[in-house]
Image (cartoon, rainbow, N blue to C red):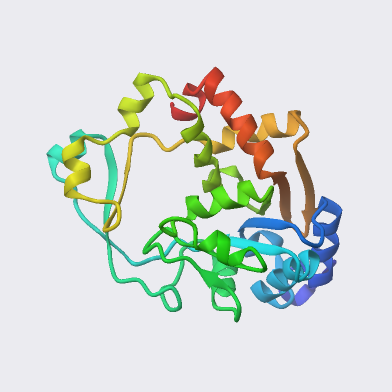
Length: 265
């Protein structure tokens, strides 16, 4: 890892630097790893997004599977009526046509580069897709309706990991799995549940919307570190964190049961 003057003193990271860091985190051949990432967080990466992807693939080997969220940009914003705003809906988008091979994603340059790679399979959900490569890719991307959360459920069942590359838990959509494992209190359910008429008017296969406060997943970072379920390393300027998805969900369930208001305030 070096600094190059012609790169305005940015830290320069190579594929080998990333591979060494991933191995030190504990990633090994055969692992199933869900990746959330920010390329710019590293500094300057020789080879760009492809170098990061190559590092991941070489560390898990042909026996391993890499998974990334590829939520698409095929959304047209729709203005909410006063009645709709009164329901607590935060935003509303119409889902436009979707082609898993052509529709760009909004989750960063690494997933955008990844989805175009030969052998990568992208799920069929029109806005919340997931992409994967490896022996378990078809199983992960083919789950249920192709929604990324269904794919993360399979990663959980496969005893997979979540790898955060320069980003925090706030982007870890797999954490939504815990919400289906607990009985949230009524005052929170009222905040996040839309009325029946709204759901009937805007079915989720054609519309994207959100209701009430989005859970503050980042609040679980310190508990993860305190409970020693998360490994951390710095590569270039980026902080990388690795956690077994089962451990993450178990801890989140525990906290949701004790004090869910921490996450829904």
